[in-house]
Image (tube, rainbow, N blue to C red):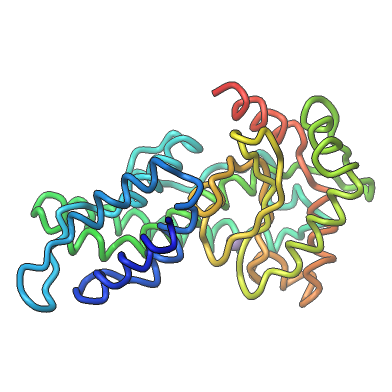
Length: 284
Ligand code: MN3
């Protein structure tokens, strides 16, 4: 059902302008098959596209992933739209050494993460102007920028909290209910670590490796997302932990040895933070 639906959508979008079919295919309709609610919303969205004359689109609906992105940022950081700022770290820039050096951390936090935040705040201003003008085509044309920069802000903010200082070489092992769930879903922590490392190291180009929680199945899973896509929008999983494998996250220190960086990341893993995310996901 979902695939014929997508075909219909693509045909209709192909007739009109102002809608990025690739972006919608990638970001919006991926999980249609599993999500009855999404299908209903998709229907509404498709029906709203009115071809007023040949090759002109007049969408009356706004891409729901724009609001969803701001909602996820608000849930993680408590920030209202357009009021985004660099979250303080729970450790100093030298606090993750030797596994992540002060140079890597400083550039990553103050230059890269800040850059995405600046873009997101700018996109918000245009988004509000588009809403005020009732120009839905203009608003929808911002979706790519908002998903990219908002996803990045969200992903980095989760990533920072997933780590804590550990100057030693030992790898912290999860205990409590998150440890039990990892044993249940992956066999053992060691098997989880091996699979997460292999899957995340194999991401083509830039992206993120994730430990996510599928609430419906009551199951943890390993996921990947490309670029700055976020796991909840792409896979419907609640983020527990994420590892940034864009080269800027590790290249200064690890060069092209992505798996070695992931090994360092495991030594920094903050299982108290991951446990609290698991508790929150289970209780809502
Ligand atoms: Mn990054």
